Image (cartoon, rainbow, N blue to C red; front, side, top):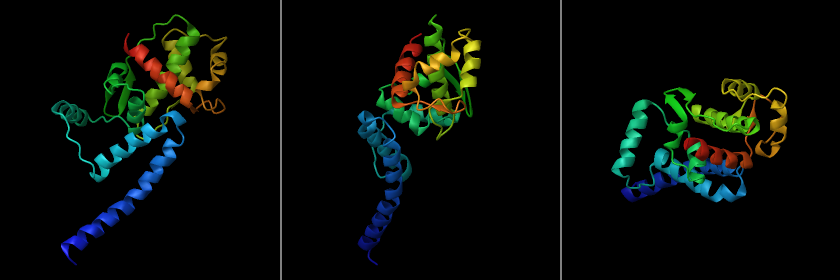
Length: 204
């Protein structure tokens, strides 16, 4: 077999292997609000090509290279779904380190809740806990446990016993469902609200 035929064979195998991850990316983006699907697909595909197949080469700045070196040294890499979310909403990845202290497999909140309105504070905490869970492990969803949020509200001294559940029911558009209280996942509207919360809290 000539070198030209060998090269063509390798390319054919590469494209065959590429088909499955592309289908998985399409399935993932179809779950996202239609407004963000195209951009999210582009981000996820480019990331996969660069990191996994190395078919796309893009000159990296010295600054970006240094940041990635630091990230690898610390043993922490922002999960791809979170990176896609941040890029979709034009939020710098560095913002994560303003909100959380991350050390390898451990993550702790470092943000402050300053609003005096308990209803608003509770929703902010719920959204940020969902972000924390998504950041903590590759493949995790943007979701939270209601009991976990209850404890966080108590810690931040914004817990309203009488209206705790009502605050969630008054904001059902932010969640896909409230049926499973251990796994309350953010809806597309909830992710948009999370982006706004991140920007607001990171400034404080």
